[in-house]
Length: 409
Image (cartoon, rainbow, N blue to C red; front, side, top):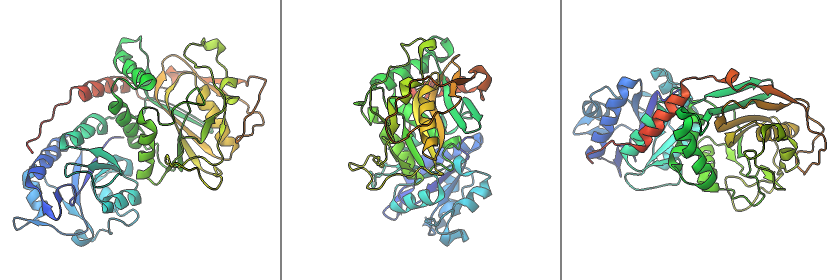
């Protein structure tokens, strides 16, 4: 449930243009040395052998890191070529790490192919300059260290979850601006989601790390986000659509920001009393799009999308009573798909309301329902799966804002 293995590509990470950078290697060695006592192994990964100062690079780098670091790859230990499907599996098995417990640090095209073929989150080192627009940028080794220590080592990426039949809904943390233990990060999340303020980079990394290290991306075919309350809402509000599209590309998962479309304005749930919130507010104002836009492309798909037998990950910022999530679920199921619902934060105390019986629904066009569906409620407290998650999030938030990890290079 947390980072266990860091795979460092040699070319583009430890060195550049065929030459090893000793200053970069020294700072990476420090990171490796500090991660090791926390249960994170590090390995070098390349399709060729490397020698530095007359020594095999693994021996040379191990001295710098102060801990053994092995080199794996096609020309080294007989591992499959990195760009082959599942080529990293034997390496991960050697270190006792699962796929979603492994991250790849690489910045060249070969790394991109290796990451996609192995379903690995790719952190793109830009300390030699940006050489491609893929993966998640870590401009400095300090930024890489911050991702690893602040986000990668979280033991509880999921705080709250309900799994019952076709319902699978989860949240990474609790939301409240009144409870003292949650107020600090809750207020910041609200400031970002509603106005782009607060700490946007924290919430982008929080969402990415929660989804990846929890294993939520397994078997997912499509990712989509839930639309804003107005048909005119910005599709890439505060850059989160770009984050989800970038995340999907790491795993060859298509992101469709407008798979769920808002055709009429809906009431915001926060000002409405809990007793007055309705499913109809969502069911009658949204529908699925037959030809949505893939990965924020300017042009829509040329052929209708098929959800038959596909698992769709629906991402939202906050989950209050779940009526938005339920609208997404019933539309996707009506189109033959399976929905996995995820929110950053779940409003405390509010139960999740599930649509008990789904009326006949046309998923790809506007519907006009007149009767409010019956509901089944799942308690908030009864579905907390990690009581330690809120304190962990608060600590991560503080560490992120106060991050200091000076490097020499």
